[in-house]
Image 1 (tube, rainbow, N blue to C red):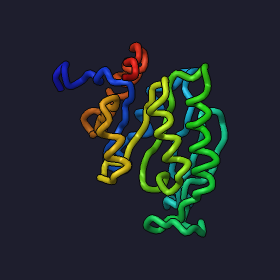
Image 2 (spheres, helix red, strand yellow):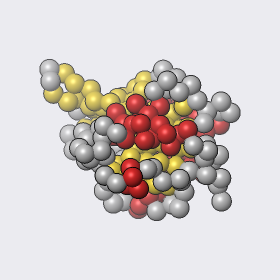
Image 3 (tube, one colour):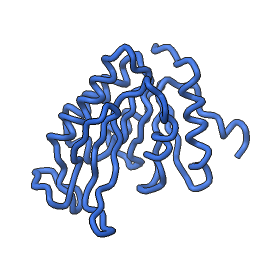
Image 4 (cartoon, helix red, strand yellow):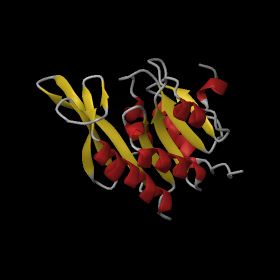
Length: 187
């Protein structure tokens, strides 16, 4: 990788994308590790007996819930998972809203912006609120095309970086360096 390719662009917001399981959440977690000025949420896998049974939501201030699960009864199903739209709104979206409105927060972590989370109107509105605000947004975004996702990816204040096998070890450090730079002023 050349020096130019290694640098994270000087945009206000940075979104990580890539194939499922490529390490998007790990890159974000490592980049914000030890930062007291981060707010928002992470997602994770739920497993039983070695099998994935769903996904969790954990906020940086310690709240947790279920994003989706094989046993969740929901009007929104993606594959074999029922989406817990209530937890998406009350935990994930509320953590974005809280971080966006907190003067002590400098970076809003949104892991991730994808089909399950988009089932909540409150979540979609919270993402737009955070991107329009005065704080940096560091998040993961689903790679596939969708009008909402495409609109976010095409914003001039957003850079999208793909996590690949060849860059996933160095990305956390590069993202941390990006977080240490002064944020671009909103236009």
